[in-house]
Amino acid sequence: MEKQSVYDYIKNGWDRCTRDTMSDDGTLIGLPYPYTVPSEESFNELYYWDTYFTNVGLLKSERAELAKNNTDNILYLVDKYGFMPNGNRTYYLNRSQPPFLSEMVRDVYEYYQDKSWLKKAYDALKKEYSFWMTKRITPIGLNRYDSYITPEQISGYASDFRARIGTDVAVDDENMARHGMVTAESGWDMNPRWKFEGYNYAHVDLNSLLYLLEKNMAYFSSVLNENEEELWNERKEKRAELMEKYMLNSEKLYLDYNYSDNTLSDVFSVASLYPMFAGLATKEQAEAVVKNLGRIEEKYGVACCEKGDGKIKYQWDYPNGWACLQYVVIKALQNYGYNDHAQRIARKYINLVEAVFEETGNLWEKYNVADGNINVQNEYKMPKMLGWSAGVYLALCDQ
Image 1 (tube, rainbow, N blue to C red):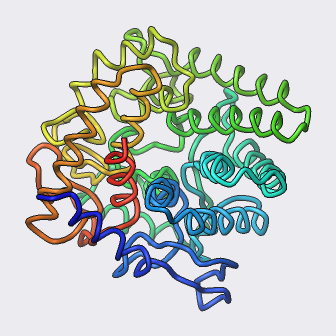
Image 2 (cartoon, one colour):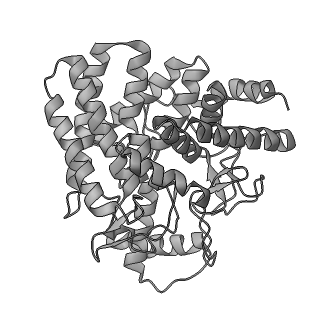
């Protein structure tokens, strides 16, 4: 089909997926600027990591002001709460999501070149960094996803997470609830990477993003003449050393590390490409990832994880392909000069989106990258999607 049809759908959809809620409304936390939501029919909140991938599309479709508004709203929430919640709902105040804010700030700054704005963002990012380094730190000096749950919430959360995977497992309610909330903060809810003890892991994607935050903060410090570059560079170098010490396997692949029993996850996933996305992997480590790319690459894109035994159904698993993860993989490959691989995967995703759009008239939250359709592992009725599906599509077409 003609790409212009998808372009028109997205162009006309941005305003339908924009909200302007300045005052609190029940559980909804009011925000000072208009903001985008992932879908006009569901998820009517500003979500954290979704917004980064939405913004890359907004910037490609001449909606930079809306991308800046999104970023300013997140900075506002960081100033208000000391961290960015999962979304602007009171019931999301017990957890965050993957910390992509420094990348949003960098994109907006590089577009507008406003140093006064960057100074305010820099100070807010220090608050977010403090949250991760105090509330989400492990005994080995790396970071983990986690959340806060009350004793009264345990039973309900455990029941919900068991329902999401469609089966019962031999895990007590307290550990099931805590594990489930770890997956919620990771954005990968639910997934097979950590069995059912995600709270015992240092997570490779999170630590890669915090390395990227530290790297961006060194850059921002230089731009602003804050004279803190050495501090931020020391922090990122220390993190890289710890990640190499604990997370690198014999094949030179980065994997999630269980610090309670000194083991690595046995699931290869897109998370192993985050060190390349952040630019911390060595050339040799990048080569090892590319050699293993076939474990997650399928005919129509990249699956979350390599194919397992399929006994438990997770929505962040094979054969599901999410737009955000296609983008991470493609940027990771481009960062290390693997442009042919990046172009191949980008073309697969673009073709998939266009083929399914021609059939259904919509973009979707996720896709089946093995079969090229929307027959996916679901935890709920899959919504039509603009958000990151549109953002990533536009960014990849632009490239």
